[in-house]
Image (tube, rainbow, N blue to C red):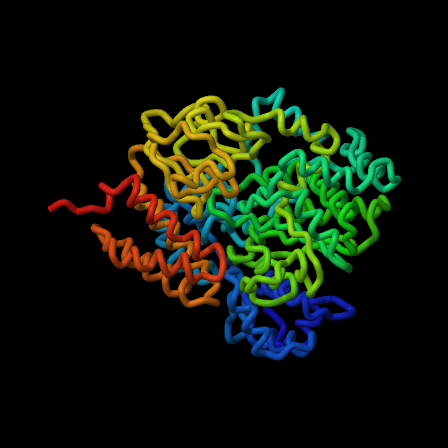
Length: 571
């Protein structure tokens, strides 16, 4: 039985001597983790504690999918069961799993079943998450057993792994990052990481052994680009931000919300200090005052790994306490957009900002900000250590560098595949994924998650990299590749993607808020109304504030261009 004194209870749950308004989402999580929801009396008390009005606090809390506002304090904790409806999980039977569990749990009032967007475990599909406990390769019996055993917390991770080497993955393991059959793989702790040369480069830089300008030049020469999807030159970004007057902030984007993407989680679960060293190198070169890491809420195990890894480098004196601030997302795909992410860190609704000004000039708390995807920072140590020529020596068909492909769908061996830029889908499937699943023939594929469009099997030999897919109306984005076979339909993949966009639209601009929903309704028809869809495509592209609305029509155009027989009813 919960206490009824919401004032005392809220202060106890927040448990801080000083309250910071920008930490609102962190405080909401503490209440939500305890009750499984956000009781209105506690939200009212929280608004008084942090000095923000109730309407503001309620407005922020209602924006994020992982918060459920209720009128009264529950007598017993509410446990949420999220069943992933990402397309990879749907192909693996998540729809049938959801139906089965809805019937089995119809009389259990303590379990709140939620149809959830991609949870970032596509290589382990289908996936369900019981509060914070991921159930991989989920079956009805697995989920029911987890409920009976009250498995609601992510199992603890252990820092006992001896090493993880990107160079070895490429040259000794054929680009294979093995799928973990557990949900708490070992990670490389600080002692093991330093034993293998970790943080030597950072120390050398701090001693002045290399100039800051030479590091930026090396990074530009490597052609490393943003690996979250935007593809902007990492070195140029460092140069731009470093020229703005400080204080400057660094924001690491670990939201990884693009459906089909799971590369960042796989790397983080194995080698967090490689990422942290890359982050600290960037911070040193650019002159950063403080770093913020924004981690998607679905990655509960990663949160423990990062918290422990940050504590290790604080205790070792590598950074001052508080230099790195780990922030927790709350279930909002739009927060993968850099300005929306910054709004979220500031404790606001994650709504994209109008630009200009750009975040490099006016970012977090109004200061110049260097915003990077996790994987971009993960590569920094190796590129500087081995040299830009080492990185650019990889590649096929006149492309350079390495790409981490999140491979899922109808293939024998899903997972993260570290392969040369410019590789084709055919080569990825045959050389890295063990081929198609038995009795399945390639039909099509999503080259860049839900946003990147859909390509047919006949285009399985085009190079996969930045800028190579634009002539087909597609893009590689985060390199999340979902492979379809002859038993799948492209229109189903497109409808799944549009349902995702409609649900994840922040609602700030009406073209996206209304347009994605209307497009979804039209896409349910057996024969698509091409004139109406064409009008919506134009409005979404021309009038949406951010990339969500602008990219949402890609799947419609892909189906019309490459799979038109699925949406034309020839009577």
